[in-house]
Amino acid sequence: MALIFKDETFRDDFTYTNSPATIRRFPFPFIEDQYRYSVNIEPHTPGPKGSVLEFPFDIDEHYVSEMRDRAMVLQDDPGRCQALPHMMTAQWDMLELVMVALARDYPDHFTLHRDGAHWHWINKPLKIDQKFVFGEVNSLPYEPMEYIGRQVQGDFSIQDQRDNQLWMDAGIITSQADWSLDFDVGMNFFEWHAPVPLAHEAGVFERALKFLLNLQIGKPVRRLNWTMTINPRLDTSPENYPKWGTDRTTVTPENVGKKVHLRVEMQGLFRLPRSNAILFSIRGYLMSLEQIVTVPKWGRRLPRVLKSLPQELVDYKGLSRYRQTAIDWLEKYDDGAPTTPGNGPD
Amino acid sequence: MTPITIKSRPVYPGLSPDLNARINLIVCDKGGAAAVSELFARAEPPFAKRSTVFVADTLSTSEMETLKKELAPAACEFLPTLSSGIGRLREVLNDAPMGLRLYAAGTEPLIGSVVQAAADYGIDHLSIRTEHRGSLMRRVQCVHCKGFIENVTTNPVTCTHCGLTLFVRDHYSRRLAAFQGVCIDAEIPGDVPPTEAIYQ
Image (tube, rainbow over all chains, first blue to last red; front, side):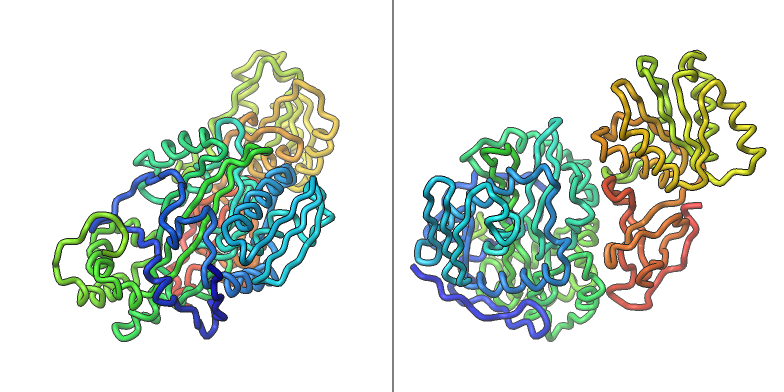
């Protein structure tokens, strides 16, 4: 089925909003009424038709506008896309994985013809028609990671594997929840997660790393992560913190439903065949509290979860200034009824 | 010892001699030179004979003479600044043979600069023997304008490039040889806590 792409903004006038069908498929991240830290990794196998899990790389109604926002970020700050020199093979791996998946899963929008190393890629929504030679960097207008990264929703990093460690040696990161690729590139798994509170002590990262080092080709995995963002802003980078930090002081009981957004990251991890690196996709979904409470189960559960957060997490996720306002507003939608297990709408 | 806070924060275990190394190359500043002299005292004399020490610091002639005697029989070279010391290190690493062991002793900006330069020559950071001595001053990168601020002794600190007031995090990048500085009053401009001289 052909998607209809919206024309909307993630900055200035913030016209982004979800259509009713997109609300129903939102990956609400809480499977119970309280939040618990866990590794929560599961096989990235195809989910129900129409869900965000149907395909390995989910394309939705926001695709064209998100790609436009990414191009603007890269224009202002080319450092959001970086790859260390030894990552070129992994870049081609990523390009192949994404192009093959998009052409297979969204044939109305993307087409890939391959004749040996001679590839022909057509991206109809973005009006791109590109012939190139696989493996020849000069046959594309950008390096392969940036080329395909400008055409697929979600941020991406590529992890090299050596010395029983994963090293974040490449990435295209324009819609991050407050971490800097430019600062973190070249770090190992423990180092780039260093600022995360509580989880190191809980052994979460050691277990996750052990698991990921054994990730197999063709058996990707996924997990959900979340935070909250004021206004539907994609670029909440530390680089631009002075531009969006003040948003956090603008939340009032009157505007909280519209302004505060739950930001969910569907994170996918794929072993890459030539480089043995791991592609990490961070596919973000934004939904306002106002839209969340249109699903009664989520309206009941979200205030309960927000109340159960440990203070360290509240601070780390930057919720301190508006969490209580959000809880007070959300509680109107919690009638105290029990919620069913799992994250989907009833 | 510098306190261990988060996992990206480097650990400096202290200098220990590699008795199997054919050449020992040691980069230090004035404070770190004391650690080098203690290292030589702990090891047998042949170890110092196989060692070259680059002292990258501003020193008086008499200080140089004293250090030369103290560090003998190692060969001593004096470089007037950290950056000239790193330049000299790069020259040597360019032609370095197998069996060279690298050491760094002094402030964190010195150790970080040695580790950063060595990475360009394929030297793993964990193979470099390091000891922190002297000031706790830090090298900080402003995450906003990407400028580097040298010899930071306070938190917060004003970015010398863009003027923002930065909170100095413990998050550290070996590639940049710097800690991360993030605008401290981005949410409420002007709401800045008192400056504390905590990296003296």
